[in-house]
Image (cartoon, rainbow, N blue to C red; front, side):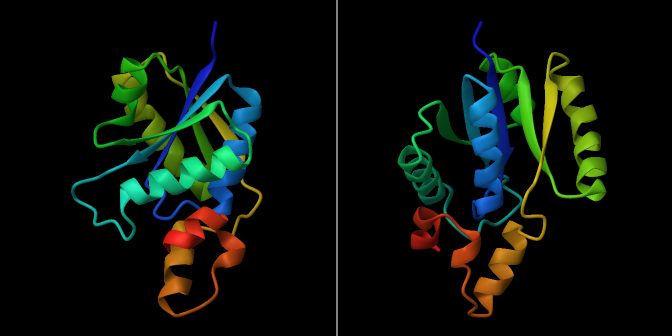
Length: 154
């Protein structure tokens, strides 16, 4: 039986912290689907299609052929159910992330009771998409925080 996992997020932008989680998940699961969630109520800084292409380039360059990237505008628990994905991947930087993720997990379990959560400890606890956007907005060098293909579109 193939072990499939979903790693959803806005990835606006996709950081080295996100990449670290994808690497860990790729080593553990047969298939990992990175799902770029599009929320109509939130304005993206970077186009989802461009981010998808840059993430695909990044994982291909690293030889992670069991990782795919999808843009999706619905509920991730529904996406997982429809695609027979049993595991949801999340990265945790601290206890606040854990509390937030557990609340979301409870809602997702109502939609998809078969869903199991797998948490990976983040290595770069200070790195977040929000931090990268803020630094970039002030003209700071964000290259240490982003894979090259992502940096090229930022």
